[in-house]
Length: 614
View: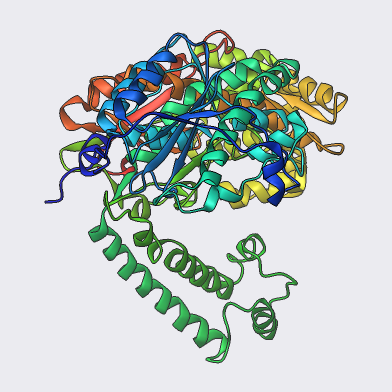
């Protein structure tokens, strides 16, 4: 059986320690006149930098940094994967002193890591990074833990320019914007695994010096934009994000193999049906040929996109066959055939990349593999499983967007429903149908869900009609949608007034309850200005919970393995699953304290796979 992967076990596999000891040396950067090979780049660092070549010398230099209130930290690595690549240099800058460069290939890793753990574990010092997730991940796998407070200039700048086009956030971009000078990144992609050149050392020292200089103007820009509180939320979520990526999630290859075989069978069956209907020569992936084939069978349409075909499938069986083919084809090509390629060779797990500000609302985005795009079907999600001896604890927020909208709009009906534990969907269904809430059936509640979520962001009648059918399988005419809309806003007057106020307000900026901001280059839609406060506040709540999770889960053996929208998945030793479930629910439900004055509900389950979510 494959040994269970942990970050701790990885540290033992990486042979990074020990090297020849030599004298501690101080290296001066070249005089101004020497930098004529790159005249477009002014020298940023006019001071010498320190690069001790003995472990004892390195530890002495690290000791001198203790008690400093501000430390800028950067790393140079042999690659981009913290699980297989290694840190070559760790650069540390502090005001008024030359930057310290630690060559981890020429020093004893364990001794230097121990000294750095003492330094970076000091909660009295602010640690400044640019793209902190990257550096923290490499430091973690090297055995170095960083305690807050942390300030990430990249995340900070993303908050400042959120929503604006052409707003790059790389270190060189920030140097140009705030310090008014260019920064060469030519050495970034050079080989950091061999002997280090003078140019590489200068580059490393320059980067950490620029980072140190950026702290003041970027932190001032955060304060000026009234983003300090939300920046703190983002920074405090970093340890959870680092753990999330390093932990990864396990894919059951046997289950995936069975699913792949099943989907190939469904694909071939759908292909055969399509060819029987439209002829052997048809290219099912050609919209032009599909339009012609449908027209020959008397089915008139000018588009073959999914929503158009879905609206026609009940009337035309031929369309249903095309949709079955497309679903099976996409499942095979996009998911089952590609999933094995994401399995990490060292850990045997999939390690997606999570981007804290991947969406303008402040919600996470995910890549390599994008778990948010895995179909919400048991066959697919059942392939993601905990390691042997473990369970998944899966929790997500119940109706988080509607709860946030109730707080923002101060709608009295919605607030009362959530405070008294009523089912808002059932109440809406009663309004739409004229029935007593106790008499509402499952189909009518589904109708109400479509109306609640559709009208929350000012959807029009035609849009609501399409949304209800495509997202909830609920048929409603445009006339019915208009009637439902009128009844809905006559009942939820606070929501109606919030829509009006937002429509008459600032068309270029919107904020969440925690102050997260989105800007627009040109006048925005009402939908966008309603969406940001709700989705963004939900993101704030999720990230507050993530910031608290690592401490709450200490000594439980639980690992954070996935985040999908409002859902958190933990991998937990089987005997502690119920205990951790209680902890997770408590952390999630308390994350709105102080700004959400109605109960937040997190629904949790213990499961043997991702498909086991209740």
